[in-house]
Image (cartoon, rainbow, N blue to C red; front, side):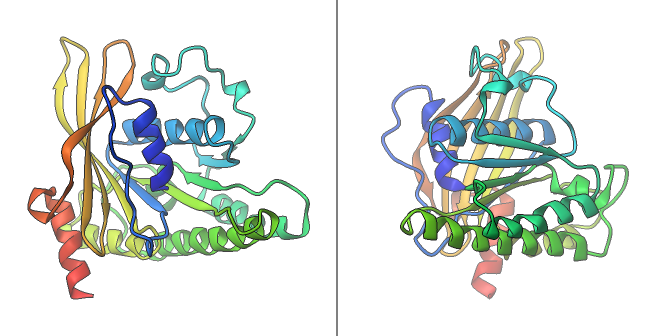
Length: 275
């Protein structure tokens, strides 16, 4: 959900942010987060916190691993925040793909209830649900990924209709999914897998580590927020400091053309032109 990520980037930015994250009107805003599983999880958690506390949205967060405490990378960013205070965030701990599918499908039952409808559905590490532990190459069968992505997309559209009926057409339900795409399989298999996700998640947030200083306890990432058609990339610099604070800094000239994009984004744009 690119607009939520925009709020996250601005809230935890160092320096002045003069522009907002821009998503073309035709893009649905459903977002795929690619990168290291730990930092991706921190970004998802930060998005959930921001959506719940700053925007007042109901958030549904699916994950295999229970949060025993705040992710280490967020403790310094949000001092004093307790998990109990996140009343608008519902964490759902599911172990298997079957359980995940059943829980998502059950959200359609909210249409006949007066229960609160989520405005943001987050799935942490979809690849873990689809393929189990990361001990080998991705399976050749892409149907689990396609099924879950399509179900999420259709469920969000269904819940958006409910929200619009309840809030005079002003509310939408969006999806945010993290996925670790690097694998031991071929590049063609990886690209095919991501192309399946692209059908339902039109915005990508790609996290690429650029510096790791173990001695200073400083890690840095480049964050590329991209929409495939038309090609649009906005770039941010993310820093995890020794004390655990996570900071964002906009890269000047953040709306960049394809020549400034990482290799994966170039490939995405090529597919866009071929479609």
